[in-house]
Image (cartoon, rainbow, N blue to C red):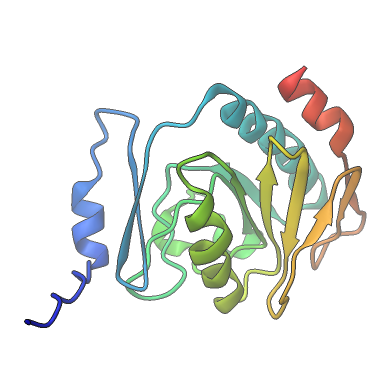
Amino acid sequence: MGMPAAARRWTAAEVRAMQDDSRPAPRFELIDGELIVTPSPRGAHQLAVGELLRKLADYVESEEIGVAVTSPADIELEEESVVQPDVFVVPAACAGPPLEWTNVHTLLLAVEVLSPSNERQDRMIKRRFFQRVGVPEYWIVDIDARQIERWRPGDARAEVVRSRLEWHPAGARTTLTLDLVAFFQRILG
């Protein structure tokens, strides 16, 4: 009996070469040599992304701590890894103008909205990655459960938030408060 073939290890250059600006999906990401391909999201996913972007953009602009952005974006937080969080906050020091992905080496926040096809990647692979590279907060938005899982570096378990999420990043004068009941009501009706 032969030895099983080793899994192919992808490079960041190969992943960037697969990106095609002429069509919207899929998204390609690379973490620890593992290629992650994500299909187009469903409508509720996009509504959640838009709502979070609006809230976060207003907050980080008023606090003058950075800029809130959505993917697609090729973010390389460590060599040979390319990630595209659904929503993320780039610290002011990296935010330009102009905002260039090659200048982004750290994030204040990364957010993924769960889809049936990406649960394993978001909860396991990306969570461990964002914790390892020191992103201060990583949120997993579970639309079906109407909750957000908050992860910080060093956490062994998520803080599960269902009613009110408060975020006070370094450098901010005030706290962002998200009413999650109202948030999910706007998305799901």
